[in-house]
Length: 189
Image (cartoon, rainbow, N blue to C red):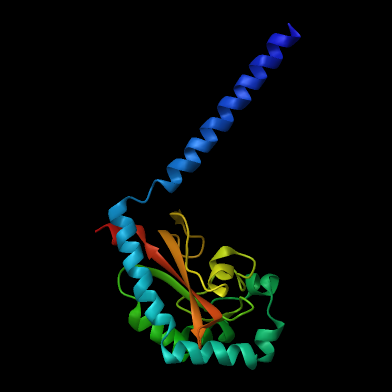
């Protein structure tokens, strides 16, 4: 009797693991080749945004001359900082944020520019995290690579999107990252 129960438990656990793996694989399969081609084309466009002189200059300045507010910011403080706080509003109105607004278009659901430490230099709207250091969306671009996330409902925008990230380069060296959320519905149409 004990042996039969153990086998049933094992079989049930194995089935649950297989179902979990198949759902994980299905999540990655959400991107059909046509949609992926559109994402890849958008990544090339976003790389040109990251090379804009105003973007590179803002990241260089952030990395070398942090304001006292930037130096004091952390994840906990960011979580309690209002979207109407002058510091936050300033990050939506500075030159790189204004440039991102001109590039936005219907497909872009969010965009944020980070310095080498993952802290925010500019964005279209307040992000859920102050720093994305330690996450692939920042760390891979800091290694000179692009990154593409899975399709998900974004926490800060509430839209079904996928994020892509590219490095901000200065003389070929990564100095920051530019993360852009792409609306899946808009990409598909």
